[in-house]
Length: 230
Image 1 (tube, rainbow, N blue to C red):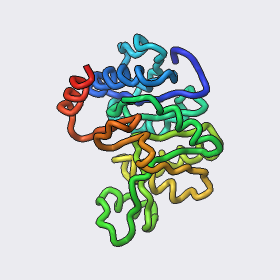
Image 2 (image 1 turned 45 degrees about the vertical axis):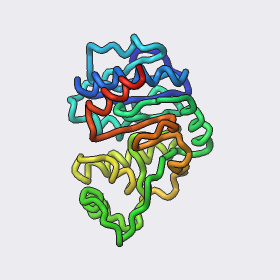
Image 3 (image 1 turned 45 degrees about the horizontal axis):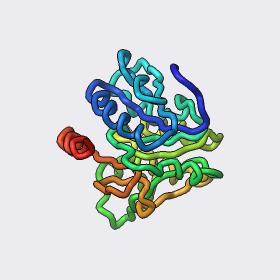
Image 4 (image 1 turned 30 degrees about the vertical axis):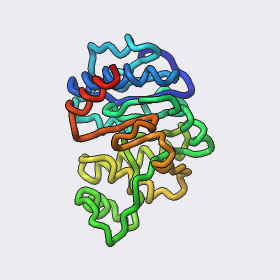
């Protein structure tokens, strides 16, 4: 590891050249709106993350396809006592992300809720498959995996260990179904739940949210986003 160890910070996981190129833009832009240190978990050896102010990186010698392996294990890599994890295809676009540090005080984890599925819901197939493998029944509360805040507590370590194991049991595909199932299987874990109305994290375009995440529209979205910012 290079850099520093501080108690609170922002963590990104960046694997592969494609996401490296995007992350250099999203992290540089994010740096404008928070003074928290940023740490990047990456498998890119020759990178320029340290050229971004107050940013360090941890090199992890794993192939590109194992980014979710690292994400579900990130509590074991983060240098921070309280970590704000943000997907690298998300960006801090205004001040205020630090307020989640107070929101996780006294809790193990903080998740943002995006809904609850019942047995009447036409749930996505990969959620149903994971629920079947892990023997989890409806209702199931769903969380955004692109924005997670956590403390290094004993219960949080246990949660991440089981999330990782459940993700493997479910077939090492998407990690969010295993995240939701793990939360339901661990009622003793102290999870603070944040609603979208808080305007801290947004899945779709929201100019009022501190963190904006956009998945699926690819380079066109980000090219337009940074063009508007310049």
